[in-house]
Image (cartoon, rainbow, N blue to C red; front, top):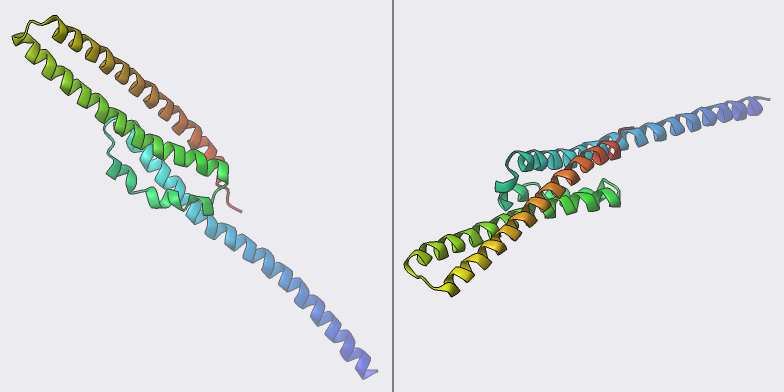
Length: 170
């Protein structure tokens, strides 16, 4: 009889321990999600800072300003889904491309200015044709730059919404 009571008590205690272990598991999962959220928030903040700088000074955003957040974006696959990470990476790479476009346009404008200055002292039709061709090239590059800039702004707006919905706490 005493053995049955002890066995029954052990059964009750083990049942309560089982319930507490399920509760502890649930709490551990919530804590893990909260901890994960901190890293997701870091990724969002990095994106937001680059986007803010890009919108404010998009034409003059240097690679070193973007590179500050490169490590955070590099670690993003650990915390966010693949589709969102791919969009983030394309945004960051696009920021570097914008700078490259800007540098190309500036370089070609400098060449054009040099040719136009030298054209004043040379009255060659070949030189004038060269200036005209370079002017068209600079204009085409400038247009490509503007299109790329607009697409980057649109991607930034889309990503803001996607990241906001992709980062959820508990």
